[in-house]
Length: 348
Image 1 (cartoon, rainbow, N blue to C red):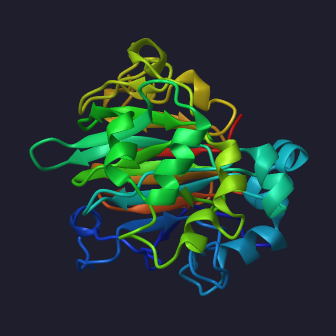
Image 2: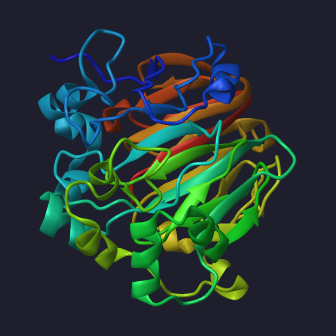
């Protein structure tokens, strides 16, 4: 009889990147700082676009998580998930610490990814801001006004970064804020912003502002050519009212759509529902000091304090800086203690 599946505390997984960052990840995890370690891919079954094992999570027992899921998809994901997504986890979670501003870029939607990358998934994503430093921590989301496609093509051809950035909405952010980034939406993350990012499980980034970041324009358009890549770019205007469909404001306490329950609060705007789910869990605020987590594949990120995850088979300590992958087969879990946890899940 196979061993019962349990929550697994994961080591850091920081594939090389082209931009600086990582100090905030190191501070959260208590690890050594890496200048070019700005992303920690948590519970990842996704590889870098360039191929090879970079990006994949290796479990403490030496197996790749992707291999473990493929070997026991029902145990890891459960039958309802398998019927919708097959043996894909349908989720990638990252810790992302921008040590410098990221370039202006966008991502393909599912339809474009199927046509051009032979992938079931595009790359809609969302950010949960967990840290912000510097004088003006800012993210950039969507063009302020609708732009002619020819204007954008000219900016990309000339690598007119000031015009690209000026055309975007500059949105100041603070810890507790969340932002959903639909596929196609041009965006960037400013220096000093530290997020937990949920996304569809791909590495498709179409980078309009490639100069000074990437080695070649081919890396920017992923071999498609910019004429093709820009077909999926959203050039429509996003005014303040429209941005409210993407952005939720919060603080260091649980907040979101269900702020009536301080123990378990949904964090993301409804636009995210078809792609992923995120909650902030604070079991100490629950009536019995314990939260029951329903069975299902999940990724946990502990932001503060310490507590315990109890399953029918045993207990797993969880404390600030821990990242944990939870298989469906672990069953219902009891989270207790003075701990604050982000629970990231695939769509319902």
